Length: 561
Image 1 (cartoon, one colour):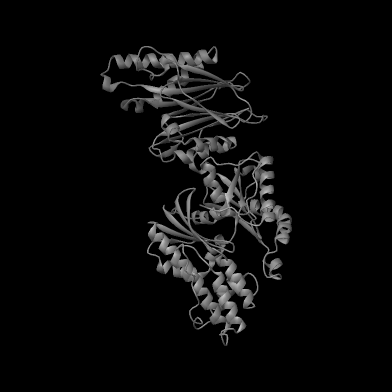
Image 2: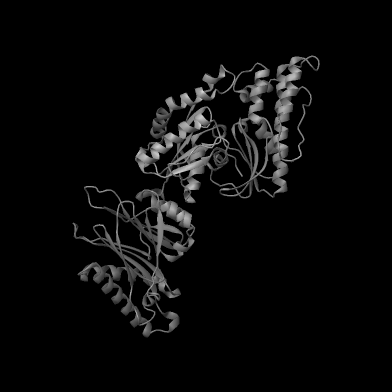
């Protein structure tokens, strides 16, 4: 069966009726019913106000006079052309009316396309796009412009998964090839929302979709009105890179419908750190219940998910495998796009969640977590330059190790922050590493210094709270100094602080105080590992047409930039 849909934008707003889009269903339904869909493109400055009248005339003549689909199309277009030519013969050239048109006559699984330039369409089949434009000499000039006229015809026998998208030329020219491909790869009811998002900046445009979908008992519906509320794209985000099993549903890349995290902190606390094999087993047991809860909280069924985004690295190999294989199974069973997400990129895109304003580029991202401490310049979506990184322990790892030295248990970050808050003052100034690469970090020497103090190698050890405060001050100072330097050196407009360590209140406060440019810090729940950040990053990849196949594998050592 064929699924038909359309949208139109006029004066910058999505509207039910626009001059450029026409849908004319056959009043007599049944196997011989033939529907007409068309896109009109004004070709002269004075033609805009006549487009609505032109499309109505074509639709009326088609349904009144068709013997065959091609005959009906030809007669309707020829009559419209002759009427415009008659007008133009009586008018000064600056008042001529002319228009390009794409008309699709639909019957059963057949679509007859007739075009007169300017016109544009794209046919999607088996993952490949074929652009359809008029080729005949007599179809290269608009209706009404010259005496010679003959439309360019094409026949499409639609099979399941095929898509025919007719567009106003302004829209066709604005869509990047990968963005168009990513949109057409979506389920039928997700194609137009994806195209609309890429078209919403255009003041006047429209699109009509004919998509082949599995047979159903009822007749295919003509979707007459699509408002912006209809254009919600739900991305399921799956995160299992370490010791949290996380699943989220995010709408349109920034609105969190659900964000469920199953933590393994209690399991690993007895060992003083994450045990990879135990983490993997816990992911296997938690995966389905966490998914069910995420769908329930989002009030979304699986069929309401438009794409599956999953972390494929970096992280623990066994943990990554659980999430990735689960995501592959869902993508295969639901016939949904699979999107590979870099865990570090996911942390950055937490800054896009639940915000009225998107971060401005170039942005300087400071990613501080248990496994990473990276300074990354983000020059645009998907455009990264890694300026600095840790040469040994990551900031979060240093917090865990020092917490163990102080007998605080796991995880170390929150424990040290709580203890440091009890101190009247830090226990002196602990070292900050100076490295050849000015934006790199090193925390192993700091950890060793704390170890020597705790053992009494440097005299009587200070109170634990004062030592914790001094350690925290050193880590925070190192992170903030390098981030602010890098932002200034590269003319960043904003700093994004993210990763598990970004939940540390001292780090957030000091960075906000010392940065001369705005600082964006996600809420603490979005700084630690979660599925919403993965869905947000996956949504952006999907808009750019970047999807993965079922051969996708994990990459435990994946880097960014």
